[in-house]
Image (cartoon, rainbow, N blue to C red; front, side, top):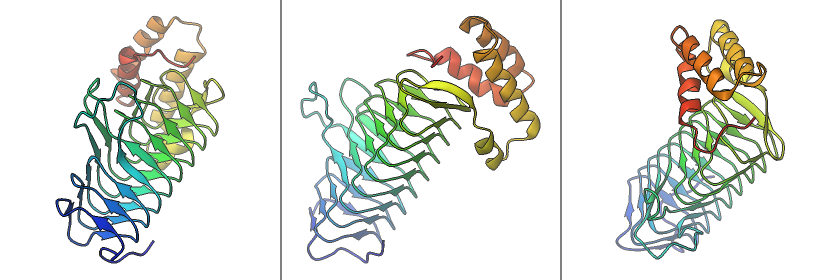
Length: 260
């Protein structure tokens, strides 16, 4: 996508804040309370509205709806927000909504994410850094996605679920409960399959750390221990293996329960 400056057909509210070097494509609409950081490009026919703040060097492709009201019947025009970080790639026809007063009032997307076409991020979601969302992945409200997670195409995530760091959802996954860090899942509803070995290798995890994560996975899913017993055993192992602390904390904090 190559854009330069603000296209003469774009409609930009005079109160909108557009950073140096930002670009706005043909027939795009930028509303009053929008802030767009330096070097960010907004594609043709995009609508950026609401109290939306977009950081630096993002690439938002054509026909996206960014910062529209939440699809929540309880929403009553409260001044909620959408915040997008830096260096994200957001492909065509994505829809990101602002938050609701029933939660923190803000939907957040971090840095360096790769978000493919037709992705929906609903109200009050929190997306970390370095994630990948394949085409048509959909987050319902109040979902949290931790760093380096990958969602396959057509993945659907239930409200209030949490997706752990370095995890992977296969294509067509329907996730109804929390997905722990490092775990690959698939299916409808999702079930655990293994750990994300290739992803961990690419991110520099040592062979020893991967072996310990695999052992913890077996403790959680193959040992016939209760969840409390498995959590305790993984917590003990985490004292010697720092990478397991992330998993132990996630299990302890799970709100909807883990996929099993």
